[in-house]
Image (tube, rainbow, N blue to C red; front, side, top):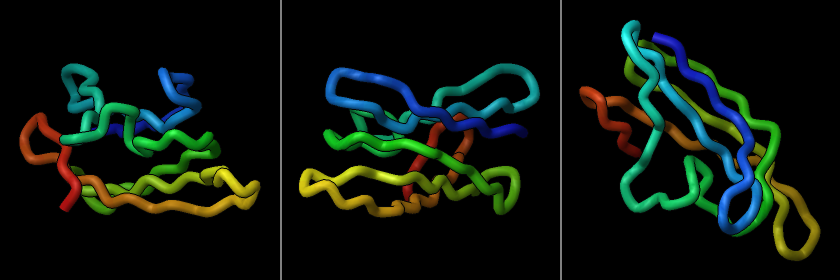
Length: 88
């Protein structure tokens, strides 16, 4: 399996999106209740990185600009259960 993440402009701002290649096809990483990608933010998100723990679990990290001008680093664990992505 291969996981990729990227920055993408959506309806709100730049958010982090991703996909998993399962050996046959690409599956978008769509988390429940996340309309704006993995980061699901109304603030600009950039510089995504991904680290695989095993074939079904991985972490995505990114930098997010806050409304007051500060920046923070965010980390989210994502697990694939069959073809579905979930946040454990």
